[in-house]
Length: 98
Image 1 (cartoon, rainbow, N blue to C red):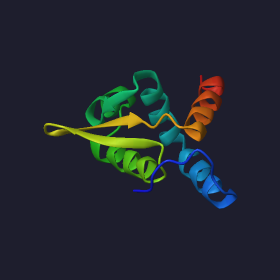
Image 2 (cartoon, rainbow, N blue to C red):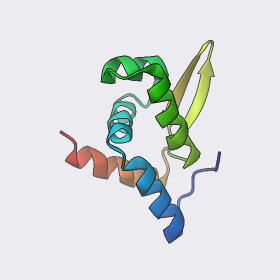
Image 3 (cartoon, helix red, strand yellow):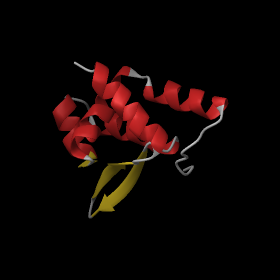
């Protein structure tokens, strides 16, 4: 997992935007933005998605540095990485979400 960066080069920024740009991932990010930290099963229930599907999307989002997985007993929860680019993305997504 790569660490979050406050400044990204054009290629890294393009990868982050492509990754976050999936409709399901945008929905997942909106749930996390509202909670700051939430477990996979809670996201799956809230979005009526499978735990496996949500888990896959969360791992992808964590790989680009937007989220951080945290194990809590048998569950895995995710934290929003509050970095410059992540804050900007959060502001943008939350401005335009329904």
